[in-house]
Image 1 (tube, rainbow, N blue to C red):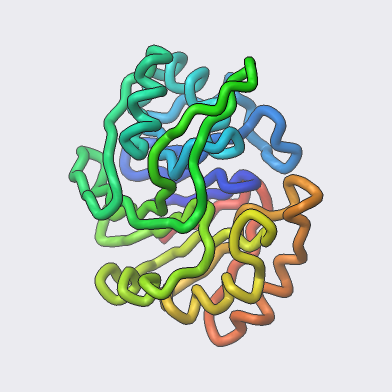
Image 2: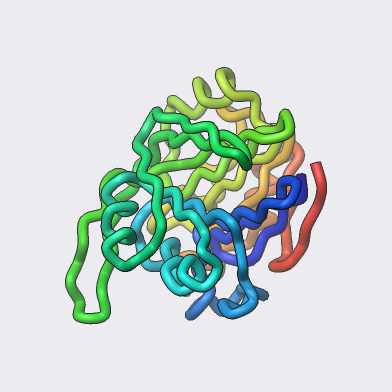
Length: 226
């Protein structure tokens, strides 16, 4: 399994012949190395409906015929846009031919703002547990810290955890470091920081605070195998 990070909350996973793209916010993302027209994933996984996570999902999915897996209300809304979707909800798991997706709770909000400034409710925000080839990846989406992270980590031993550290809208470095204590992943990777002024952070602060655990600060485009 190959994992790469692409700025903000974008994570790409390659399993066998399948490519999975999580939260593809490319247009307007000053930190990403990706180009919308070059992305041809087989699957897009979404954590919630905010524009900086849904991003370029519709354009990419239409061009590549990707299946979009998302919280149910968001999946319904994207289906109305002509995208092939599979809706899920918190606590539910589904086994696909590329791996198993399970949605966890996240403490945040979830809505999509249209070009005409209409706010569309898109269901509950979520984190994602993705399991394939005997490995489990946890993408927390946007969230505050919550005590059940400990239960998540115990029930689903995590190989890599992608955790927001930007503060203001999500956990900051201190809470994210404590989340690492609760989740106890083999590796933690900070995400959702430095894209906009309100979430500017030094990821080294997070690494220092979580010093008892292995932390990898990834540059956009950096990848590794597990």
